[in-house]
Image 1 (cartoon, rainbow, N blue to C red):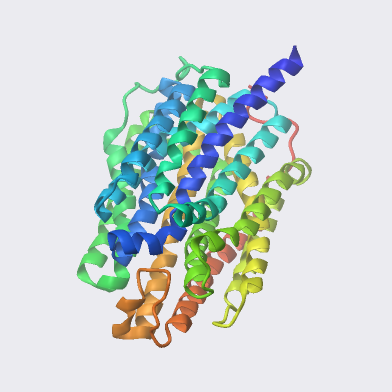
Image 2: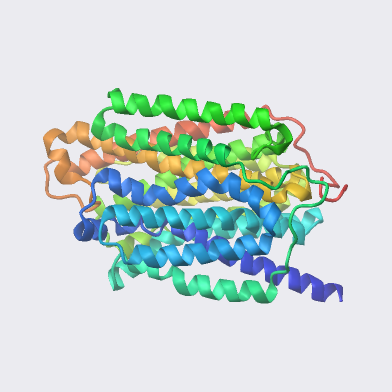
Length: 492
């Protein structure tokens, strides 16, 4: 009987991980479709960044609200509704005829993912209440998310070459349909928040608008800076407005106290602070780098979208290996050691990437992918365990939302910042000829274009490596992250 229950739990976890894989894939599936998009819809470089970033931006901006909603309406219901929204808006994206329409569809997909994602970890942590199986399940979750994100370029490349960029949206529809059916069959129902929860049941709309508006304005300022100028009035106004909105959000949460969308007391838990910080900085470095290197593979090394996607697979494989190795390290050493080791590996990988030259071959990039992937897998699994292990079961939806928000905000800013650094360097090197070299990843025969792109890649790698190094140095002084026989889940 116990074995039957275990099989049921792991079957449910597998379905949840299928949804997580889809979510991760949608983050990056369009990275290799930029040239095909350029030929079809003629977007500007800023619009390309919005198409790539809109999904993560809306996900990161609204996932906190969705996390609170998940605890109220039930986890399985939130997961299913989120899947349905993702599938519907994906179909609308496939029919887009203008860049703005495509950006709107990506926003809709992000909204669905914002509802889906908190439910995934919440379901898993409530299925597995003991530390050892929970760590394994969370490692599987982290591996699925990472594999989805890192194999997105492969799937996108195959679909672009076989069909068009539109297939990158259509592919979601059958996967969503299958996952929905499996969800109804094997994922157990879950109730809403417990009676002891002091929430009044209302969604904090002002808080949601301030947090999402602040993030949206911040990313807009970063993306628009290369074209408008980093010190231009609109950009400086955008940064100032973002700071004001995010500050107002924090003040609003303090006033709401127990009814806050994001209880600030939750952010003071050591595990949440440490895990969330690590995940934010890791996502900033890795997702921004993936955006840049998929352009590099096509524009400088001359691979087709499918060939470029295949050459990102070692990153996905190494990330999965790192994630699956993390539970043993967590049991023996606690969270600090795998997080610090992972961040050190990522920092080393970016140091290698900064040595890229115009005549460097794929082998140089392969070395970066293997080292960075192993490190990212360790941090992803251990950081997630740190967050979820610190949150009480009754707030697992919100804890999952905090975990997810940090990842997506980091990913969103990583693509925006590293893409903007790349664009700024290319513009600086090529001057008036820069417009001919962007937004497409297939660089035209402009003198110096290849070298300009490589200069931009190394500058973005230096930016990401500096962030990763700062995160590594921040981890070293952490205390109290040691192995434990019980967890907050088991002691209740």
